[in-house]
Length: 557
Image (tube, rainbow, N blue to C red; front, side, top):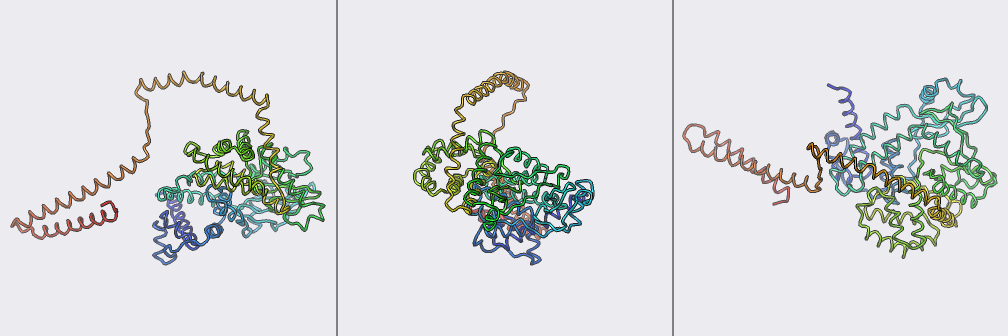
């Protein structure tokens, strides 16, 4: 027997039971009941031992209870909540706002355990690697802890060290969440458009990247190259000799949180100027660099001196291709110019399955939004509310945003919210509009048009070169009898299930009838087998009652 596999299954069952218990305690009884988790073996066992109660009641405030439940379930589920806070198209803006306040702070691990990770990754003792190293962390998150230190060269740095064995915990919980998503798809048809399994896979990729600090180090270096010579933005330097997959060492940032307004006078900073610089910086990252900080909330933006700002925590970063930037520019241009067709075309570029959309209905809804609401929202200088209304339209039409666009919209809405904290009169429209106009103008640049023509011609030439070979291959497969055509019929599985259930009932009835006939013959024959005949009648009666109950429960009589 594979004892390791058995142990893993037992561990998953225990963790599943814990998840069910926490969800029920926080008021998600309806969710547990709808996806059938309370019928699983762990839940039945715990109910039998009176460790958890059967589901009852409904949540009073969905978002608050969800946040509490995710916090209690630990690091992986906290990260799930933070991930969902970037997906207003899936959970709605209200829930996103609540989940964005999930506190990724936990009790710090003892320094001795973190020291082992650091020394294993860097290949030396702390005393050999650093001139000074504070043993008390300045921050403790679910995945890592951050320390202040000094290099031998005298440079003050921050050292981010990953918690020991956190990868094993994350992978185990991801497998569990994937099972829950698969179960939910099978039991709740309304969730199909959300693609729960695909969302879990997207989350898995995101958190695995976050666990590899070398990825974050490369991203910081790219940001540093983009802002070389920019006096308004400071990007810390990464020290490669003191960094590895689970350790990241970079410049200490001597600043204050951007929402700590009491620090501004001492640093010769003006809140109105800093707000404008922060918003312009994110727009420049999106429209010029195509690489942007996706979570610029006040805790991730520091103010230094003389209105200079710095971004920290590059674990959540978005990347865009040129067509993506054109699409976001077209979206805003469609709203600014009262052009719903352009707006819808851009919105469909954002989605994962645009072919499944009723385009005419979507165009009408967007046209109504632009006519009756968009101009009012823009007049109130609230781009965040504009984004919220657009994502609500997507949700009503059951359209799922592509992940890179959900990060982009979150970044714009978050930086505007941060800017409003510094300057309540901040107007994001005049900041973003020049970037939109520049992208639109660049599309008609002769150099760009020539490049587009060249790319299209190359694509046509490639198609012409490959088409004869593809046709020849298909004909060859047809001659050899190896050509297969696969058809998917959406209602076929249901028809097969109904047919199978009907045939089972007919078989049940035939067996019961045969037993009754046989028992009758035994009772009528004077050969001493009357008890067997009576037993046969009893069995036939039980089968008949079971069949009747099955028919009544199916409500198809």
